[in-house]
Length: 251
Image (cartoon, rainbow, N blue to C red; front, side):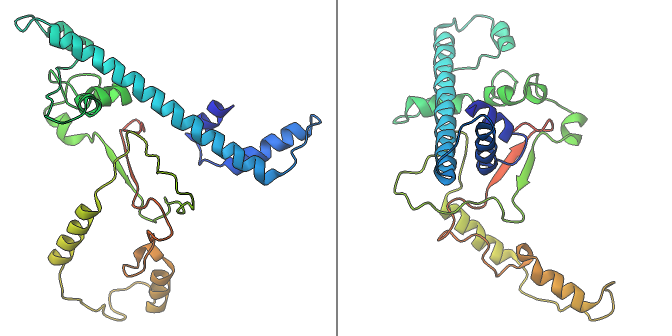
C-alpha cells in the first residue's frame, strides 16, 4: 500500500489527506470504522514518510556497495590492459581520494565523474536515453538541451517549520546552497543592478489602463520584490529547484 501511494505521488501532487479519506471510506463500506480520522491521517503520513526514508537509504547503500565492487575491480585491473570492454559495460575509473575524506563521499563523487568519454554513472542510471551513450558532439550538443531547470517562480514549494527538535532528514541526492554563498550572490546582484529607476510614462505605451496594471502587480506577490514570500522563521526549506532531462526524468 505504501509503495502504491509513493508511485501515485510521482504522477500527481502528494495528498495524504485524500488517501486517508479514501481508505476510511473503503474500510467503512466493508464494516470497519476508524475511531479518530485525524489520528489515522497522521499515522498514515508518518508511515509513508519513514517508508520512503528507509527505501532511499536502502537504495543508497546498495549503490555504494556496487560502487565499491566496481572500484575494487578497476584497482586490480592491469594498467596496460585494454579498457574498451570495461568502458562498454559502464564501469568507471577509481576515484581520486583526498586525504581525510570519507569513503562514502569518495564513492558518491566517483559515480558523478565522467569516465571513458561517457556521462557519469549517476546520470546513466537516471535516464539511459539521454546519457546512456557517448557524449553528444557538434551541432546536436549545441541545439538540444540536456537538462531543464525547474524554478519555483511563485514561491509555492515550501513547508512549515516543524515544532519537533529531531534532526532534519535530507535526501541523499538533494543539494542545498550554502547561506554564505546565497548572501554573496545577492550582494553581487545588487551591485550590478542599475541604480537608475525610470518611471513608466502614463498613457503612452501601455495597452491597458494604468489602474488595471497596478492592481495586477499588487495582486501578484511573486512580482513584488520587497515583499517576503518565504521567511525562514515560518518555513523550513525555501527556494527549491529541480533538474529534469528531456524525457521528464528527475536528475
